[in-house]
Image 1 (cartoon, rainbow, N blue to C red):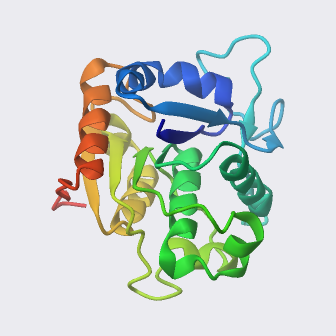
Image 2: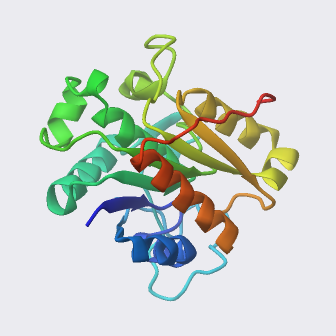
Amino acid sequence: MPKILALHGVGQSGVMFRRRTATIVDTLSPLGYEFVFITGPCDIAGTAYIHARQEDWKPGDDERSWWETDEVGQRHVGIEAAMEIWGKALKEHGPFVGALGFSQGGCSAASLAAMLEPSRRSHPLTQKYLPSWHPPLEFLVTFSANPYRFPTPLVYWLFYPETERENLIRTPTLAFFGQKEWQREKSQRERQAFFISRCENIRIRPHPWKHAVPRTQVYADEVKNFVEDVRSNKSKPLRLANI
């Protein structure tokens, strides 16, 4: 049974993300796909990092992130702890054919896909945290993927031009973005457009909401069609000309 690793956004958990992606899961499960939802290492409940509780939060839900962002120090804390959890998921539940992530989880999924690509298998962090037997991912699906806000050499090698101009993610990618978010929040548009520009083989799809995973059937079908195309070697990249 092919497996897909699912990585939540800031202030969420694997349990909450399962609820948010229920339509996608219900659409792909009959085709034999199994989703594995894991939870980030950083407990940010009650911190300034939580500006507003998730609208579908339920008592008992964890509020986690994959790493924490120090706005004053302009740095991220906990990235290697996240890598360790990704590697543990691969070892315990893999192999995976793809990964799916929202917001910071989209960056996490993209980072994992990059680490598994042949050009980065010899990097010390890949060798330290990921199992050598796990193959490259066949596909990547992201929703409002935000790249690292304060990148450093710790992450440059993943998909940043500071390493080299052609240091791109080559895993076939389907990237969703919210039209309202891009219209109203310039910084989010710029960050997400930068991430999209670092993917070589990508389909880009808008949805009419803001920073969200669309829950209607039409977008779940987009994911299903993309996965089926990629896995049958029919993937045709599509870029937006104006980003």
